[in-house]
Image (cartoon, rainbow, N blue to C red; front, side, top):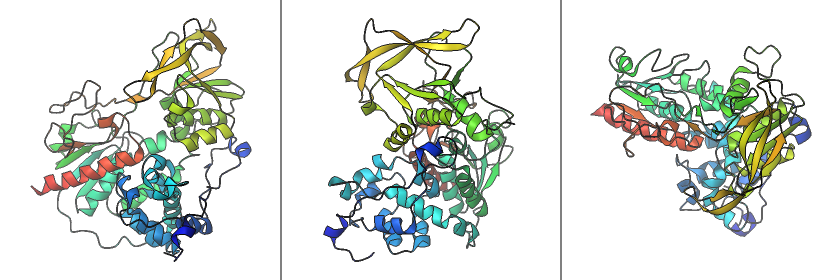
Length: 471
């Protein structure tokens, strides 16, 4: 680490991530953030105080050695920085883009107590990106002696990939089963290209293939194969269920069946995975050009849907939320990017009914003004209706982005126990389900989690599976 006095490090201002101009990016699906240059990265890395107790690491679900990799960036040793991250995080290029560092590692940063924290996420992304192709060309190195044990992983999202990466390090054979025709789970179908290029996900999957992980697509466990078949006929010694939560929630109001109303899952899957915006798309979406679009919800998925609609040619896109901006769960960076792109935010309004044009098509929505009361179970102030405040709004298309539940086809599998919310019951310490040899983690257990939290569950499961296979 360059020998810069502590007082001088504290004077270095946080370096802004370069980005596409908003007037240009709304017309393309290219990545918005352009990444640090080596010069910017080294300057940002020099802001790190190299705290001995490393509070930032305590905020990381996979406990990356943050001070170490930042020190290596400051020294210009980018490949070593990436190697340091990879010891704990198999998907740094992904996490550097989509993880909410501001709520995790950066929240604990001491520099942030008197100013803006060190841009840990931006530095992680820089380190991963600058070495991505170099890592792909490097020799795999000596692999562990095979144990003869084999593990099946259901799903190929972040939790599955993290688990697979650790299991092969232990010497176990690993096969990942994916229901769709592309690997990456929510990383490929749920997050738009302008936030997470699919090429980055492909690189990370290929890196796992190079160390021996097998990937099988178009296999729906529960239909194509059953859990029993995996563990008996196919001889897997353990199974990790990381199937995610892909069942969209709806508002449950009149008119929700009208043509022109999408779930965010359908819109984003069609656009992200099946390129619905292309003229020759096999599974297109309705024409968004010059339309007025309302998105209901205020999380990252709602922001992704709104910004996608804008890129599909919508003339006006609104986020309608029953609370205020303060309570929005979306990342601040995504909110800022949406504002820069011209997304309109309508707060303290809740939908009561979608309006029919008389021919089964959406023509508008009836809304009700809201006010905020005392905090509810989420810790946010509860939205309360304002009587007599109903009003109508003309819209052409609507997207519902209010959360997801699990839609596991394993629901009736003997030995597995589910909660009333259809999430799997597990031992919180080992992540083992109620069926011996079967473990689970990620959204199918939590109902919803960040990428890095899901990865943390995957790594925890890998440790437990390794212990189980040794007994």
